[in-house]
Image 1: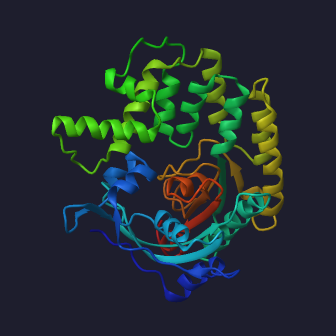
Image 2 (image 1 turned 30 degrees about the vertical axis):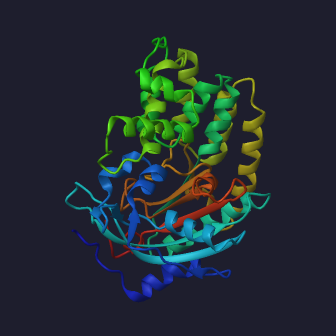
Length: 377
C-alpha cells in the first residue's frame, strides 16, 4: 500500500488549528467500517476504491475511506441535538494511479445542528475554516470553488419537468457520469416496460418494501447474496434502472437548458446572473436559494479574497451524500483533480442513518500533504 509522506509537526498543527476552535471536541472513527453501510450511503461508485476485509463471522468490512459517516453515527448515538467535532487520522482508498497514495492523513470538522436559519451562516463558516486550514499549509495559489446540489434542484423545479423526471435528475446532480447519461437520452421516447419485470415491480414500492420483497424472493429461491451488496442497495439500483428506462426523457430544449446550467463556471455574481437567465417560469425556489447565497458570500468574502472564489454547479465529490452546498479548496500547483480541502452540507445523511428528519450537518476535510507548500505538486 502506498503511504503518503508525513507533514512537519508544526505545519500539521497550523493546518489543524482553525478546525479545533469554538468548543469542537476531538473525535475518532474505528479503523474498520461496515461495507454495506458505506456503499448504501456513499454510493456504489466507491466500491472499487475501498479496501475490503473479511471480519470474524464472515461479515465484510472495509478500511475507513473517510470519517464523516462514522462521526455522524457517533453523534446520533449520543442523543444530543447539536455537536461539533474535529478529527485527525489515516484514511484508505485504493487507486490505480502509480503516483497516488492509498493511505493518507485527513484532518476535518463536522458540525451538527438543526437546519434552521443559522444553516446558511454555518455553511459559510465551515467553508471559511476549510480555506484557513488549507492556507495554513503555506501555499499562495489557492482558490475556493463552490457548488450547490440544492440549487440544481431549484433550477430543475423552475423547468416544470414533472415529478419522476425532476426527481431522477436531482438524485444524479452531484454525479457527473450519471447526469451525462441522463442528458444523452434527451429527445428519446421512453421504451414501454423497460428495465425488466422485477425492476418494474420494485419501482412501485417504497425502498423498505422493495428491499423486503427482494429478501423474500431470495429466501424462496434459496439464494445467498454475494459481493457485499445488501437487499436495500440492490433494490435501489433496480428501481433506478426501471425509472431510467420507463420515465420520459428531457426534451431537446430542456436538456440544453440543463447542459448550459451545468456548464456555468465563473465568479459567483456572473454565475448567478446566468442561472436566472436559464431558469424556467417556476423560479420561486431558485430565487430563494440564490438569496441564501448572497448571505453566504457576504460572510465568505470576509475570509476569502473575492477574486479567488469560483462557482460551478457541476462540482461533485467522491461521496454522493451531499445534498446542499459543496466546496473545494484547490491549488494551481497540485491540480484540480487533487483538491486540498473538500466539504459541504449533508442533512439527508442523518435521516438515512436513523437520526430523524430534523437534523442538519455540514463539514469539511483537509489533506495536509496537499496543503503543505513543501508537499505534493
